Image (tube, rainbow, N blue to C red; front, side):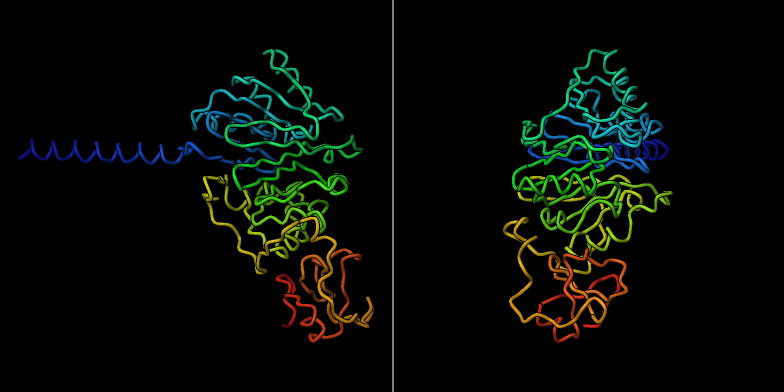
Amino acid sequence: MKRKLLLSAVLIISMMLLFTGCHLANTTFTPKDSLAVHFLDVGQGDSILLVDHDDTMLIDGGNPENGDDVVKYLKSLGITQLDYVVATHNHADHAGGLTDVVEKLAVSNLYVTNSKETSSSKNLIAAAKAKNVPVSTPSPGTALSFGGSTIDFLGPLSVHEDVNDDSIVMKVTHGSHRFLLTGDMEAAAEKELLAQNLDLAADVLKVGHHGSATSTGYVFLRAVNPRYAVISCGKNNDYGHPHKETLSRLNDVGSTIFRTDLLGTIVATSEGDQLTFNKTGITPTQPYQEVDNGLAATTNSVSETPASTATAETATYIGNKNSKVYHLPSCSGLPKESNRIYLNSLEEVHAQGLTPCGICKPPS
């Protein structure tokens, strides 16, 4: 009886170990013909890992104190070598943690932006030179073959006074799925990209500057028209990121929002015609609408209806030409002046085919 009990115990323990091993393997397993995009939780900072077949790219590494945790995360996936490391710009919350990565892992290429140096960028370049890692700046308009994906470098198009606008901007395409990664790009750089009439449409937008109200403007957002938006920010951060204005704009276009401060590390996987996430995002109150051309959506009028007689001073409701959403005049998420439609009544709202804002919840 004792022998049987002992054998049973050994069998149970073996099965538990086998199950645990399988669980860990499934956690880190990336399907062969897929692109996995890991949005790492590095607090108030950015760090994104791309894995496609045997190719690997780390975009930003959070603050200097995040470097060791980023290295541990990579090693937990079995990654000890990176084909590409990218510092989107020189601020500490993006470039700071990459020094540890370059020092502790094998890195084949380092991409940096042409911008004002900081202590973080100097430390990173010094670490790369110490290990003879080639350092270069990708030119806008160039493309990189990455596993089964293509990475197009879109920006920055010029050097700016604000280092945030010098962020390297990349569009990653895997099959029919597109990811737009923007660093801390703000309004000035967004306008430059729009002026080039580039194809900015993407399924997933890495929201610029941690969800700051100074990024992700309505015109840019309508050109991208993302079904999903990922915001990397720290819990209870001092900046109040993400700002309510940005959340309102994302809601207006029907984007499902994923936040690292609420969900931790987020992994999106593009495989065939399937795009999946390991976490559940925040469902928008407004429906997502497909558009044939995101750029066209910024210029088309809402509908061919008689103009309202309402003014900024007398309007009962304020509509948005781009998102087709209407607000109360007191709403915190009002569009900029050039995109507003002033309306007197719900009849005029309905004639324009607008839908109510999910923030101020006007009558419908």
